[in-house]
Image 1 (cartoon, one colour):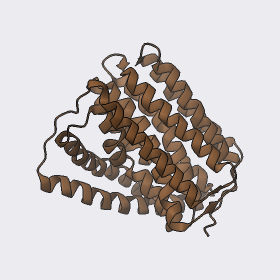
Image 2 (cartoon, helix red, strand yellow):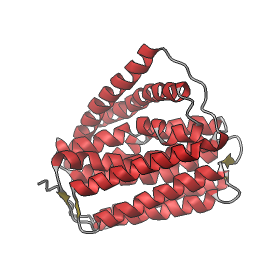
Image 3 (cartoon, rainbow, N blue to C red):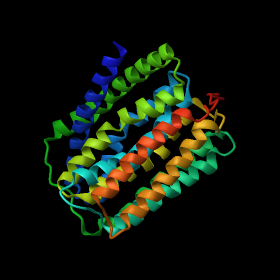
Image 4 (spheres, rainbow, N blue to C red):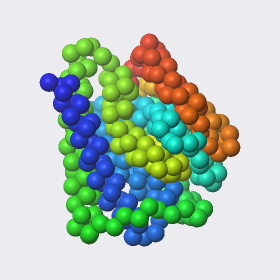
Length: 319
């Protein structure tokens, strides 16, 4: 029953987040926000709402910071490998990206990842660390608007005000409820099979919460909008590693954990995938179908590796 429930939740998350994305797209069109900026801010926020609620509910209601940490790290790995990789495979031709988009989003995301490593190095994330992460994201958004899109245009989408309000408020509420049951069902499955919480978060919660990111990016790639596809992946990751991790800490207080085992390996895997994807896309500022297959294979290898690596003894200790 829990397996069917999880599958239904992942399908429902796509439709709910799609409506949330339409509402955010309408706002972007109304205020004439360029394509890549909208992808890295409004669309990233809408598509990352499952990661936000997974981290928040995991820490606040289920007493496990590891749930959100591993889900966010592996959602980021999924976003950097599977999303660009599959987008390149389904695109009508090589996935072209504006150089400014690559430079801005990938470098900013790499900086955020390195900042997170520095903050996690002492085995604790404090409320002050959370404020630093939030400051880093707002700085990123500020830089986006300073650069202002390099001549890109957002795809026109006009919705009535009631539809925008319903999509935003109803979508956010629905994502919260769905993520609560996703974590509940996933933990029940983990307990029945004696699967570590970190592993179920990495290989079930992370891909499941990334379904909206994946499908939104595939739609953009099929239309040849490479910048939107790549920007949404990097932009949503920056939101995940900053806002989604900071929010539960601000509520529950300082969190201590053992930064070792699967958690440590996952962070370095994430850094490696970011660097590799940057190297691929820099080849003529496009991602070819062959490079896309390499990124997909890389995710499979990393997922297999995390299953055999030693488990971290992460725990939640809020002050």
